[in-house]
Length: 208
Image (cartoon, rainbow, N blue to C red; front, side, top):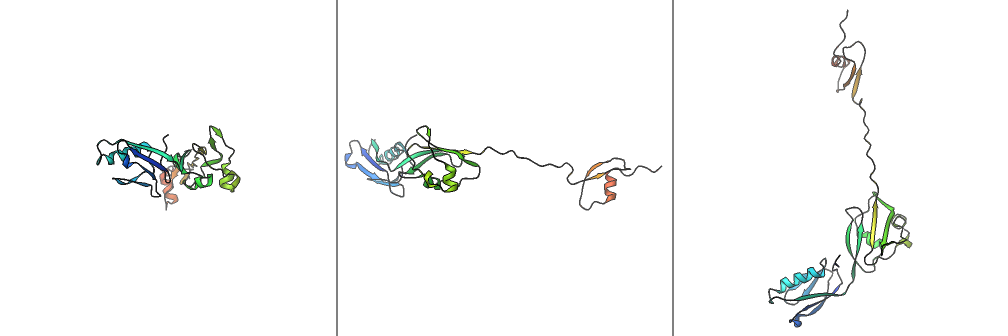
């Protein structure tokens, strides 16, 4: 995946045949950069190609067919990848010198539906010896390693528990047996009397 520009990144922007506009800029805390002729432009959250397209479009109002080059010369950010619950999964752009606790603090709160003991940090296609449960539930700071570019954080979801619905076919029922035309279970209604139940069962057999 393409690198996502972040706060603190240093970018060299140059224009072919317009070298007087060449500039080296640093992405400010507000995510913007300043460039001659066009002023402020949002750079954070863009790929270098997207930023180049934005600059080209804006500069075309002042220069005929500008040829813009965007080069990252100082990257203070890098990308890690999260696999797991949909609310957490995705490509994450973080600052350098970010450890596991700092990273998890940027995510939504982990629910009880994740299995931290089976979750893992994958680096260069190998599992690292990091125990998420000890770190996040027991506060074991020996597990608080620093992340590196391209790290994959795999958060395992617990298997869905079967939903057991308790049913009671005789709930809110009255049972009528004896000398009635139709023994059985009948729906109970608030305020029902014995006579009402007998009538629902068809009444008594005729007396012979």
